[in-house]
Amino acid sequence: MYTTHFGLKAAPFSITPDPHYLYLSVRHREALAHLLYGVNEGPGFVLLTGEVGTGKTTLCRSLIEQLPETVDVALLLNPRLSPMELLSALFDELRISHDPQHYTPKDYIDTLSSYLLTAHSVNRRTVLILDEAQNLTIEVLEQVRLLTNLETSNQKLLQIILVGQPELNKLIKRNTLRQLAQRITARYHLLPLSSKDTKAYINHRLAISGARSPLFTNAAIRLVYRHSAGVPRLINIICDRALLGGYVNNKNQIDKHIVHKAIQEVRGESLNSRHSSLTGWLVGTLATALLFGVLMWGWHSLPEKSFFKKLFISPVSLSSESSEVLPQVTIVPPEHVPVVEKPVKPIVIPTEPPQNSPVEPPKLLELLEKTSTESAFITLFNLWKLDYTSLEGEKACQRAATQGLACLLRTGTWKDIRYFNRPVVLELVTANGKQHHLIVRYLQDDVVTLVISGQTYEFSTEKINDFWLGQFLLLWQPPMLPVPLIRVGVTNDAVLWIRKHLNIIEGRSNALETFETTLSPRFDVALKQRVIAFQRKYKLGADGIVGEETMLALQALSGIGNPLLYQIKAASSD
Image 1 (cartoon, rainbow, N blue to C red):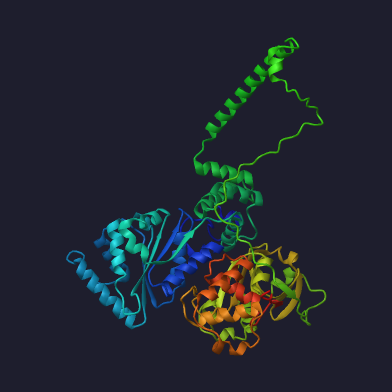
Image 2: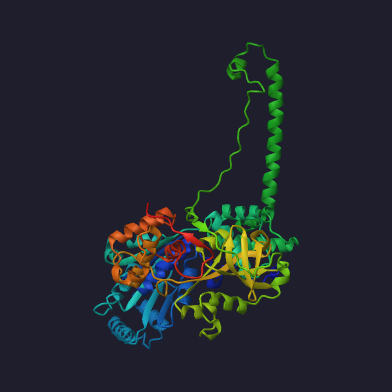
């Protein structure tokens, strides 16, 4: 109803778990990395928990979209099943022929074992995702555990991911399920969004839906956060109702008054009851004032040494000069999400500005008419010395993956772009709602060098902010694809990659070309301590596990590879 009024292509705050709208906060990225680790390398169960509405199901659907075609996924959303019904539902999802009327448990297990062995022989993997797992019975959970016994001599044939509310943790801690608990090799608890992420989340969904500019004021977003506590589902419900309220009142921007009314409607508060409460409050106030006046009249008529005056008058004389005004106290709900600070800004050594940048560039709005999405990606791939048009794949990220590169799509700020230290595709939106894509090639202080149709231009960040809603995409080179989650005990080339970047950042190595033959490919305890020290120094969450966030920081701070936004000087180990 309101999409046309606000110039949107679709309703941005639907509560349907659409991965297209997924906003990857730091914690959501970490949760997704744990899921990917469980699918690719996890030898046991993966456990994902979180409060209602924090985005667990959306993450699962995003995971399914990112998995390669060689992975078969069975997603079971209905936990109210018996052990036999669970096996039948699993067979339905995997499209395995079976007879529910006559199959015994042994028939199911034998058939499933044969299917998984055949899939393994042709290099296919099978994943079972159980959503709302806190509602599974003890008998069904025991059946799920038995499914992990299907294995070869060195690999599990079925990877299982349990997704549920915090009650699932209590359920698994029962003594009868201790065997299942011991097989959980990766677990993650998903928390709600922080205040900063709530603002980014709202603008992210609006930008994807085609918003030309931010529709919610900062005060409105703060009110949304206060009453939703950062839970994405509650944010969606409140914002959807607020947009409807803005449409009904013919408003082009949502302020805190509209949000406040939307919150009341979502909670089911009656306007009549509020008016009655207000009337009662006014009557009570007037009565109190009248009573106070009567008492004061009686007070002054009392003798000077009356017992009442001795009781209530303070021995300290309170003059107007010594009186203090009490500060106002605002009660704010407790934060549910820890504040994640950005890493320390690296030392910047400015690069030489492009020689062909004009001294007085034309207006940015005029230049945007020359942009095209394909031209932007051709330029970005050329910076990586790749021919975009010759690579296979329908989408840019698919083409990048064929060359070992990964895409990173974010909604952020110039500080984020400077931190990642890679050229980015920027999405600018003009007043008519048209999207324009161009390249940020260099970033020096507040001066941005843009590449548009092969030509370079310089603009201030402030000027670009007139058209930028925060969306950007960059390419980076992880040690392998899909991006792994590396921890103690892992042995592969990704560990060599980690050691190489840490050595450069710590000033330990000058002979980069020989690192493959001199460094160990095993992630040992000593390397974990180095990773923890690095994570602490750059405020990344010191768990000693190297995921996407830590890899991006290692690559950005080491300055290895091309192209870069600027040259950096890595800090020494001192």
